[in-house]
Length: 248
Ligand code: CDP
Image (cartoon, rainbow, N blue to C red; front, side, top):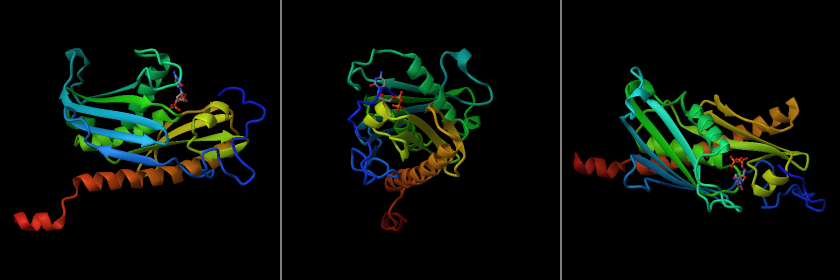
């Protein structure tokens, strides 16, 4: 969030944003499942100009052994930005930001992953941001949810994530880069299929009423994303009825 150039208008009088969206619209999303042959589950996701690749490995024996838990799997989430993913080169290796995003994203999944079924193992979620355009943590969570399902990790449901923010004084869904740079607030959220919130963060200032309004938008956005996630997974896993009857 930086100072906006005086003549820059992010929302027109007609209520349209720079990329043509209305306040309550998410950016177009494109998803491919099972793109990595060496991973147990994987997903490639484009959301607006974000490009994210996720590989899931496990459950597999956790190393080092002292990291094992006798009563459950340990879930590890590593968010990484490719050095070429942003305008100014991102310095390779972990940063305060990537460590924070990895932690809150892991915690967003802990309520749904049935880790207790796999004691002493690790479930690794590796996120590579190939191209960043604001909202990479939410995009990565949406992709990770699909990669986990692709790996066959038992979950109580999918996790879906979307941000809202404040731009030119208006509450809008799913900020793009210009809105993130010059907007007044950014508020990423992740939730279960039942609408239980598992991640909530805030950058900037918002009134309680604005947060209420934004959370309504996020609920709408997450519902749309969940439908996209479910459709992609159904396409991958549903066996056509004809094939079943032919084999029988
Ligand atoms: O990506 P997300 O919105 O989850 O996190 P952020 O910390 O709010 O970053 C917003 C955006 O700033 C990223 O999506 C990138 O486009 C950009 N960024 C950057 O250009 N260089 C960095 N080192 C980190 C972020």
